[in-house]
Length: 119
Image: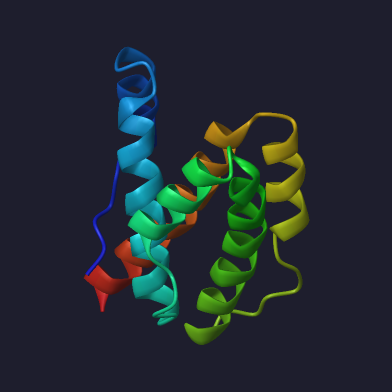
């Protein structure tokens, strides 16, 4: 079961903790995406470790893959998916706006959490 998170609180905590909470949020996003998509290859800890080891390069791959994973998860839930946000997430990541990616992904995950609660 995924936890619905308040995006504003996550942003504030990330800023106040100088990015430390951002790491926790990154790991949680990846683990929650694994849950909704059923893709057991995803792991928040591994994704963070790979990003750290590759000096951030894996983060670009992660951003692109999260667009694909979220699109697949939406399709799995029965939603009609015309396009995924992979390229958008990649561009935002290249521009250094990963925090925007986190907000967009969290918004999608919150909608999954709400659907799960209502069912």
